[in-house]
Image (cartoon, rainbow, N blue to C red; front, side, top):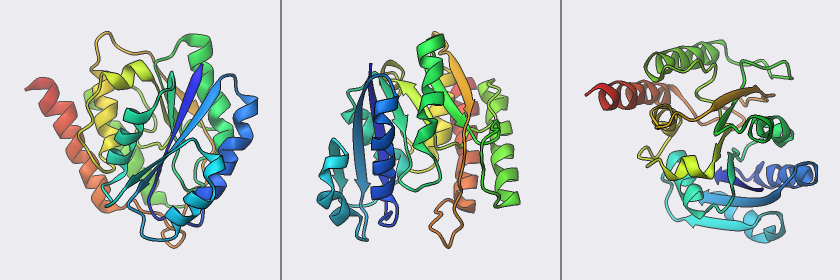
Length: 236
């Protein structure tokens, strides 16, 4: 079993090398071969230099000259992945690669097609941060579930894991954070219906001062994508 880790990066000079080292540390604990693919999405800080100085901690580096957004970077990662299973890993330290073992269990034991890591189905350590962010996440998940007919608890999670065969069947259109909603609804509409699982994960969220990028515009974009992919595309 080969596992591809897609790491989209935009201006993460403070954390990108550490997260790649953290991924390397857990390789020996997991059954299968690892392939770490870094997509440098037009970073303007020192990210590119750091990646070029530390080539031993990843297998592939894809450079995008101008920032296009997380969805576009992930799509580039999909196209360049050769693994049987694909894990999306943010380049900050909010998500812990030690959770890979739990995320992969449904694939090995239950022949899962897709696994989401939920921040709200977790008995692990989670940093306490923004109340209204959590309310917005739960509201977006509820709205998404209404049209996808899934019972997810965290549609906006950064940990999404797929069999390669599922990804091949989906054409990604959203270039930014709308990707999270788009891929969820396109998976839900696949025929035959994929086997989808959720696993509780730990989460160490960042403040905006620490580099958090998602904001109110992304919340409205998520709602737009729910209407676009969950309502219009499905029923009209």
